[in-house]
Each structure stands twice: as C-alpha cells, then as structure tokens.
Length: 187
Image (cartoon, rainbow, N blue to C red):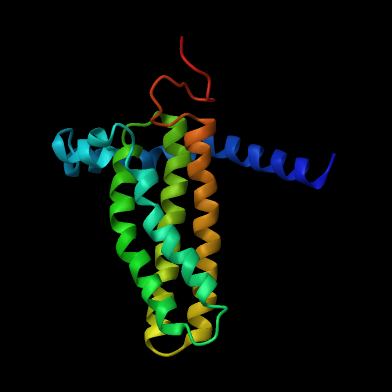
C-alpha cells in the first residue's frame, strides 16, 4: 500500500470517527436550540441557505476569505508586500462573517452525522479566524514575522476545515438535493 493510499485510509477513518462521535451531540443540541431562536425558518434563513441562488450560498461565500488568505500567504513571500498582505488578511476576516452565517444556516438543516462533521468544521473555522485576527494585529503592530507565522497557521487550519467541508458536500451529500449521505443518487 502506497503512502497516498495509507493517507487516504487514515483520513477516511478520521471522518468516520467524527461522524460517529456521539460526544458531539450535546454541543450540537445546544447550538440547534440557540439557532432555532436566533435563526428561525423564514426569509433571512432562506437567503443564507441560498434559496434565491438555487443552491447553498456557503460554497460561494467562502471564496472571499479563502481567496484573500491564500493570496496573503503568497504575498508574504514577496519582499515589500507587507501592507498588501495585511489588507488581504483583513478582507478575509470581513468576508468570514457572511461565510460563517451561510454555513451555520446550512448546518442547521443537516442530519446528525453531518452535523457532527459540521460542528468540527465550524470549530476549525473559528480557530482559523482567531489565528488570522492575531495575525492582523501583529501585522498592524509591525511584527511581520509573527504575523506571517500566524497567517500560515491559519491557512493550515482553514485548509483542514476545507477538507471537512468537502467531506460534508461530496461524501455525505450535505444539502444536496436528490443525493443521499454517501453521495448516492436517490431514485
């Protein structure tokens, strides 16, 4: 078995462990109760769910923070681009709010196994936002090296979170009409 096959097996086992982690059920129940109050069914939730678009808004909304943060990482390796890189970190932080709102709205519609993966995805995104917030502060203070290090840590976390989001969409069929968990088409 190649290292690629072993890595894929480890990733699948990790996803299965999260899907079956009933220890996540209590925080999921608390989050669902809060969302039922803060984000009831209605026009706001429909917009966040992407109903006017005909598909979930979250995959589109994540392009702004992800694109800004990837671009910032590239600029971090080009001399003299500290200000531009800091601006991109800030743009990513601003773009994280609509991405989070649409993701949370989508999450509230998922089944339990999907919500388990989703809440880990959510926690990873919060961690990345915290790292990028610290990165932005350090960059504003002129501490570019630590700002870059925090940004690269944030990019690592957001990349892992993207893997979780991909698992939700492609392996579990989250919020995909006409698909079931596991990606099979419904008859």
